[in-house]
Amino acid sequence: MRSLLAAWFPGGSPLSAADWLVFAALLSAAVWIGRRAARAKTTPADYRRARLPEPVLAAALLSSELSAAALVGFPALAFRGDWTYLQFFLGSLLGRFFLAARLLPAYFRDGEGATMYAYLGRRFGPRARSAGAGLFLLARGAGAAARLLIAASAAGALLGWSATPTILLLAAVSAAALGRGGVRSAAWLGAFKAAAVLIFAAATAAFIVRHVDGGLGGAWSAAAEAGKLRLWRASEPGRGGWTRAALDPRLLWVAVIDGFFGAAGWLGVDYESAQKLLCAPDLKSARRTLLWETGAALAASAALLGVGTLMFVYYKQNPGLALPGSLDQIYPHFVAAVMPRAWRGAALGVLALGAADLPLASMSAVFAWDAPPPAFGYGPSEEERLADARRAALAFAAASAALALLFARWPSGSDAALRLGAVVYGPLLGVFLLGVFTREKSDGAAAAAAGAAAAFNGALVLWAGKTAWAAGWGWLAPLGAAAAFLLGRRLSREQ
Image: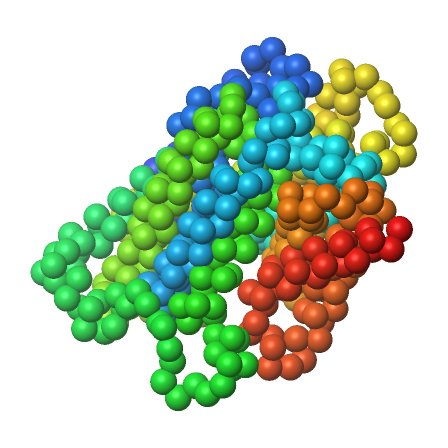
């Protein structure tokens, strides 16, 4: 037992008593918010599509973008490079406009309480609905476990814990906060998390500005002189040929395409995100929610990139400070090594919130109402489905923890899990486009197209890892969407 405890809690934490107090307060607040929201009378329809205020829905949708991976990754991007990541937002804007104009109207025609995969069932049939739901569960489940590991690794460094107890703690907090309330708990917890992330990012930026020569103006000049404020990269000197250019995600036109399909896929066919839009009372309200979230997402991305740029200036002016072994961990390292007491606890709490906000509400709702019951003729009452969903939420929390522990021993599996979204959401988008833009009605063809296109993308990832195309993973979404759409049309016409 002693050896186990020594392995789990090796020590070396920089946290003070104040840090521990702030950390415990944030986690306790998260559990209280989730459980408080669950106290409201919850009908089966409320569990998956509760009516909530637009600001809460917009903040909850933003929180889906502000995962622990984003909180750690965005500042690292700016620290290592520049602001060209914002090029993706141009394509993302187009993807959001497409979602508002074509996909949201189709979803809202399905009536009160439906998930988005009910559209596939109404448009094609039960097999297409179950195929869509199954692909979502596969991608979201694996991605959630990988993001849990990322957060646990960063948080564990601050706690002085190994990955195992950190993962178990964060998964337990998620289960306690989200196990019963469904989307109502998820939305309120997401809004709390989004506010905490933005407040902490602003506080970090203010701290650095106070401690660099020249304040904000001096930091801006130093960053500009180092080329850290570059926004556009329309071409790359010395790169030749369309093939090589297409593999560079930093180029403007590649980023716009990637951003469009990324936003259309993430917001349009991923129920974890779209669930918040479907909680709006009507289509107009959902569009307003999306508009508010779009502005907030741009501001949040710029804020986190700004933190990374300011950290670069701080380290440049203080060359004696040690850097972390991996620059991917520059933000938690900076908080632990430089920032004052209590802020380390706040950073740890924000990281924990990002991990504890697991997609339990969306996954459990899809499991209980979409896959596999519609395809197999299983028809319990709505109350029984609600009970199944709540049990599934706890099971998914345990499965996320178990898979994260596996990824801790198998790092390449974590990388593959993070890419599953790109593998799956493109094919799913292609099937939704088949429903919106054609009159094809073959249930089997739609389900087969989604599965075959996802398998095609998976094979492409395996092949690309051994070739120069390894850098072109951003093309998986458009290729998968095109493959599913074209294959679905062809199979439908043959039946």
